[in-house]
Length: 195
DNA sequence: CTGTAGATGAACT
DNA sequence: GTTCATCTACAGA
Image 1: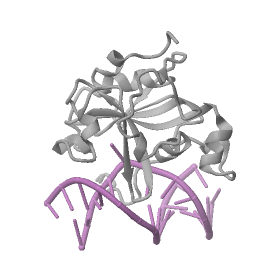
Image 2 (image 1 turned 180 degrees about the horizontal axis):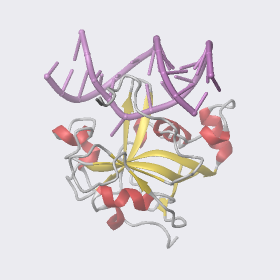
Image 3 (image 1 turned 135 degrees about the horizontal axis):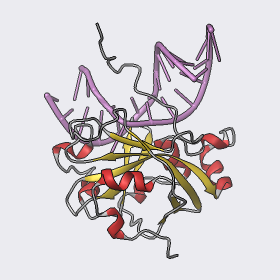
Image 4 (image 1 turned 180 degrees about the vertical axis):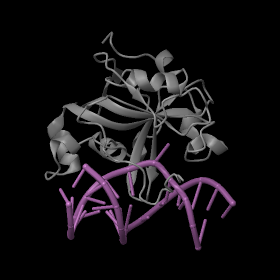
């Protein structure tokens, strides 16, 4: 397909790639999803795994762009990222949520029969499970598996201005889309004090 | 919809 | 020993 994104698309700043990924179709293991929410991570982001340099777990993140970085978190969930930036940049885009547009029965089988269609890929770990991604898919080449979809609007981050790199993670989503994850911060997260 | 609680592996202090 | 880029389950509005 001529609509497939090439490696050059990913080999740029993750903050630039992330919003362009919204609305794109990712196909793997018999399931296709339309991305509705993503989050950019870079080496200069304190919240990023790559902040303190490569580890055995994050080595894929420091490799060439266009590959899949799958990690295990909270002892029970997988999350999937698309590696971005130049080789060794330590940047990636976390796939936070998506809409299953093809292979829904397959995704339903992986997620469970009692899971609502809307929740099949609404959430990082949910999306990874719906796609059938696990440890074996860490480091997989995703070039050719991602196609540009219809252009969509995007909304960015908790903060309006993304001019400063000191901001937290860069998060992008499609405004008003039903398939955007509703989750907010952790309940334990310190609330901003105000006088 | 909101809020609370718990599970559980890997990285970090 | 503590934190974490999470999800499911339950209670209440």
